[in-house]
Each structure stands twice: as C-alpha cells, then as structure tokens.
Amino acid sequence: MDTPLLVDTHAASAATGTRPGTLRIWLHRGHLTHHGHDRAGRALVDLHELENRLAAKAA
Image (tube, rainbow, N blue to C red; front, top):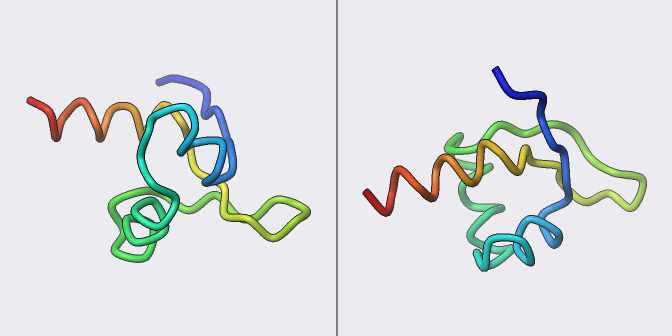
C-alpha cells in the first residue's frame, strides 16, 4: 500500500484539474477519505487515492 500523500483540496485541484467543490462533495459523500484539516482549516485528502479514483472513473 502506498504511503498517503496528504494535500489540501486546493493543491489536489491544481494537481488533478478537479474543482475544489467537486472534491468537497466527494469527501461529503464518502467517495474520498477525509484525513483531517491543515492549520488553515482546509480538508486534507490523499493525492494517490484521488488519482486512483479519477483513473477508475476514466476507465
């Protein structure tokens, strides 16, 4: 299993092209694992998990 690469939703958005609002919806619906918040209060997600989800959606 890969070590989680935790980033905030804005960094995840920049890395994948997925809108931050979409990421927040996926977190709320349980499609992505919520890994807490950073010091600024932004939700943290695992970038590897997000990339795997996007690859699965594209297939």
